[in-house]
Image 1 (tube, rainbow, N blue to C red):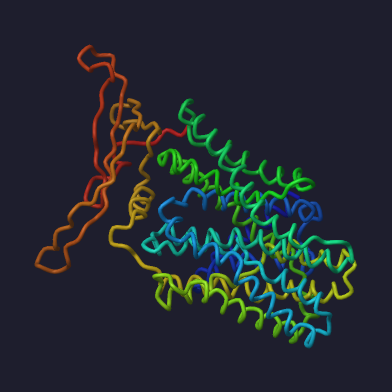
Image 2 (image 1 turned 135 degrees about the vertical axis):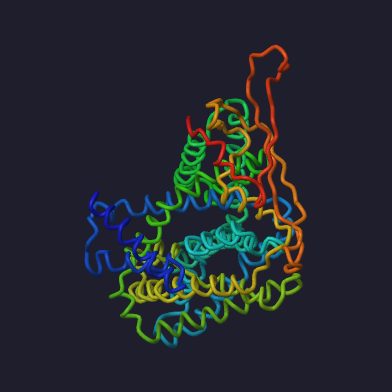
Length: 494
């Protein structure tokens, strides 16, 4: 399995690099590498790696959803709440209706089997969408209207809704008694319980992190371990109550951000580094699950069914956005963002076949084909359209995040060492400020504002005149000031 992991990392990074060179999202290259290296093409992956693939993909998905949670601000969620609620159900229902309408005629399956297929195709892929939205949020794109936050919130609930609908249809096919209303009632219950099981440990972790002076690596590992356990809790409790554990994962980050933004930023920065490896795991292994031979069997009829479903889905998505302050181009961006499919289709595409559905092989073939068509095309569309459409607010709060990362500034709670004197200080306060940017010499250029961050350093001094709090100093960092690394270095310890 070690050799398979090496293949995953080396070739995954190569695919990412090559695709980015031609202005295509790197995740497309990772997906292609996974398809080629997987058991259905070159068979370069050890069977042991494929056996644990689902667990690896779940851990990687937890990492990116944690990052998403640490980016969800209460004010932004309040602005997009209504639209997120509509987007979590309406587009999927439209797609299911479209597939149910045409699949019996083109694929020669029953209407119930077509509905099962529609439910599988109706889920948007958080594995594709969430990383791209996080990237936009990291760069301050769409911050003014909260469009990436809207897509993040809606796509997470969309999966919960679709899986419940899929379960209802599959139960109806089996001929067993299915209480449709009880099943539909599971949707709000799973959402509420998912949020609760995330908020409670999130609050407990916040209290622990403020009481005990643990450094960022330890905090990050504890948060990650807690989030992974939540996904296990969903499996354990599934016999009695449904829990949307992925929403709980996001809720952990959200509550820590609400209670302590400095701690949230520190953990988020560490998660961003972990994501470099987790991203490779997620997309290469998702690609490895794709059986292109099965997809080929779906043929032109399968492609047409997928396209009709996407047309219906796009209409439903656009209708959900009517009445919002979004422009037409911004609404089209949201429509494109709801196209990619991968995670859910790879997870449940083969379930009907295993359950004895007569057309299970056809359903699996179309599900696989939907991944091959929509994951790369949707990712490319999101990147291209997002760069053209999403706004850059002049005073976007994300500019401070960009400044902090560009100059490797520490956060509150981190310790730093003075390079000249070797003394150790602790960051105890920070202030974000906007500073006037004068016109360039010669009268060229336009005056505006630039972000700056002032940090307060504390050093426990033993001199009598230093006062009970020891010595403190303020230093400011902006594009116009000396670099932090010129005089200081961050101490990374536990």
